[in-house]
Length: 153
Ligand code: 4NP
Image 1 (cartoon, rainbow, N blue to C red):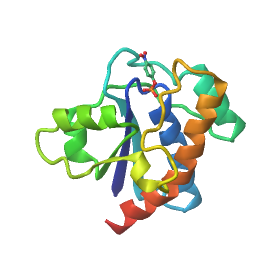
Image 2 (image 1 turned 180 degrees about the vertical axis):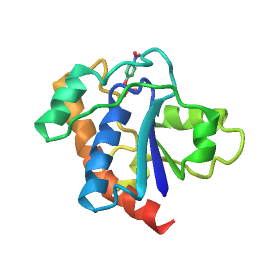
Image 3 (image 1 turned 90 degrees about the horizontal axis):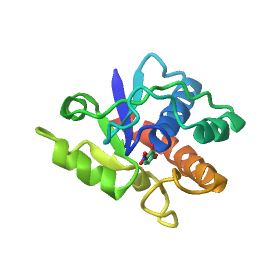
């Protein structure tokens, strides 16, 4: 079993979207029994909540049904998951601070995108509608590459 954990700040916008898209990519590749996909936030403010309704609506328009509930990332997650994918530089720094053992499995989503993309997946929480689509665009491009890396590792 391979495993990937997506991490953002609140676990209600970017990382649940990445989880939902990745589940779809994994399913389409016929690898649902071989890959575990999860998401978490570095902060705990929204623990137990569904993804933000704006994120769920934007994902729904593309055929993704976001079902996850927010949870806070733990040091144990970093030990357990093969890949831990941070949405932005701040998430990455928080994860590296949290790590007690290995940290070599922590990467940024932007590492799986062409250089013409911004390195950070922008936080859409305080912005307008288009921010949610920009997040999905980046995630949709990165997820097949992340799956490839996961299956080759
Ligand atoms: P996320 O977005 O990190 O993509 O889930 C955010 C959601 C909530 C907050 C910040 C970012 N917040 O400050 O409550």
